[in-house]
Structures are given as structure tokens and as C-alpha cells.
Length: 47
Image (tube, rainbow, N blue to C red; front, side, top):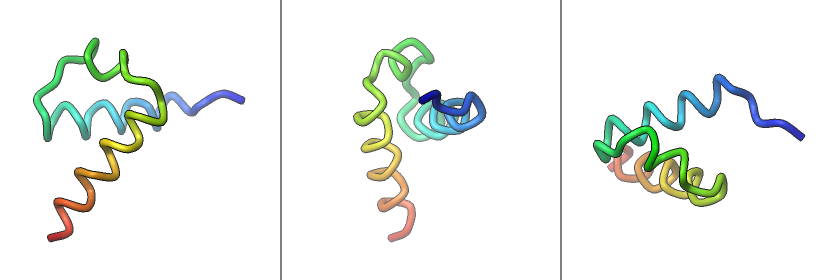
């Protein structure tokens, strides 16, 4: 199963914007970890 390239770009942009991490730092994360951070940030933004 492949993960949509557009979705990866969205995750990277989202995390880079909120955490100011580099592309390499974000892409070095395992997919489940990257999704977990995206969910954390989303919850923070809902408050």
C-alpha cells in the first residue's frame, strides 16, 4: 500500500509550519509518529 504524495506534503507543511522543523526532520519520522504529531497539533488548534 502506498501513501498519497499529496497527503505526505500536507503533513510536512503542517508540522513545519507549527513546529518549525526541517523537511529532513519530519521525513525521518516513522509514518505513525508523524500522524500522531499532526493529531496533537490539530487538537491544540481546536482549543
